[in-house]
Amino acid sequence: LTYTNTHFVKSAAKLSQCPMDILREVAFAGRSNAGKSSALNRLTGHKKLARTSKTPGRTQLINYFQIGELPLALVDLPGYGFAKVPLAVKNEWQRELDNYLQNRDALIGLVLLMDIRHPLKEFDNAMIQWAKRSEMPLHILLTKADKLKRGPAQSALLQVRKAVSSLGKLVSVQTYSSLNGEGTDELQKRLNS
Ligand code: GTP
Ligand code: MG
Image (cartoon, rainbow, N blue to C red; front, side, top):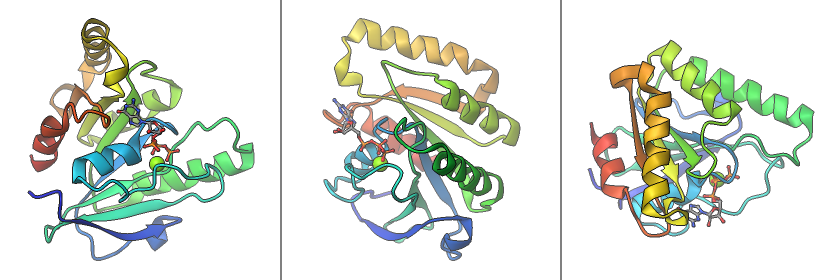
């Protein structure tokens, strides 16, 4: 798989706008600011493929990126948990996200990104439980690993692995840094599998 040959396809505000000609997709989910867009940019080697600075709450978009000519797309989901967003908007996001997760047939895997310094927040746990219930393959990135020394980073990794162990073979966990590229190979291997 060559990830450098990736291009933007479209943005969808809801499930009904998602492209119908995509057969398989992997979605990147996580709290706002977890580093989803940065991870997509690092993975694909494009600095500005996914926008890393957008105004949360103004638009709620599901962004589609196609990898090369292969029938696999990567999906940058809107962040959740942004405190400044009005409750009504938050609920609307939640509804659209739920609808997407429950009903998007092309969805074959989920990448859940959590800041390594603040893992397993309420919404993260909800996503993990959803993956378990739906038997959806789940890959967890503990992002911004460059912010911690090796010892604390490894203990965070072990803590999260332990917390999700009931998902068995469905789940994998790794450390990741968009800043220095740590974990990019491991992420690519997982997406290839
Ligand atoms: P939303 O689109 O709001 O949901 O956020 P996001 O999850 O897409 O986060 P984004 O990629 O925009 O990154 C948020 C901030 O974290 C930016 O200032 C990034 O530069 C920073 N950031 C992302 N990844 C890393 C990383 O691996 N290391 C460090 N040090 N900073 C990072
Ligand atoms: Mg983003």
